[in-house]
Amino acid sequence: PISPPSADLVRRLGRIDQFGPKRQASLQEAFKTEAELCKATEKDLRSVAKIGPGLAKVLYGVIATGEFPPSKWRGEARVAMWNTRTQKKVSTRSLPTEEGAEAWLEKRPHCERYTGQDMTLRGPNLVSDASVMGEADYLMHCGQAGSAEELARLDQTLADHKLARRVVAVAASGGSSSAPAAPPGSSLF
Image 1 (tube, rainbow, N blue to C red):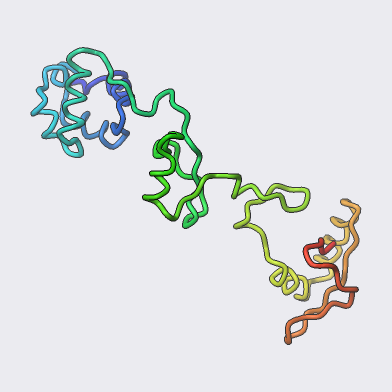
Image 2 (image 1 turned 180 degrees about the horizontal axis):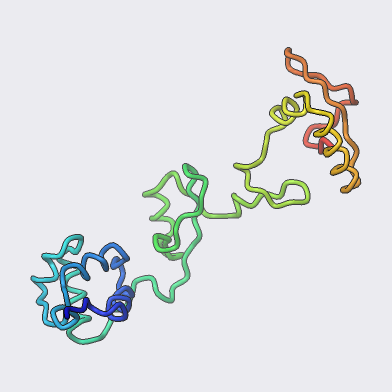
């Protein structure tokens, strides 16, 4: 019976930079047994899909000697970055060290240092900015007619949290409120 290279061997090789799950799967497909993998030359490794000459050389060295090359990232502190296009933190593997942060940012003008951009406090709950409804949308939502049951649930929820409902009437011309105007930036409850 033919057994593929052990998952343990391939998992250990996964410690090598740029040798992730897809490349690991390609390696397991190319070599039917662990013995075949251990006998593979650098040229054999280079012929595997998704494995280039640089990675083949590193893999060959690790398989032959059992010693892993030092990673350029392991053990070094990385600087958290924020992608302003996707509104998400940049993945850990692609983060720069403190020394390389400025050069990294110059190459990526759509990124900036992470300072908690996705963790803005809104009221008593921590909500990401992308999930927060703007005041105009909120007023429009409040102006929509609801069933008596919905309004009763709203009143009960507000009472549970010791809040009072403000009646808001939204006109087609931009909106007006039957309650006194609240200062800008203040809560609607």
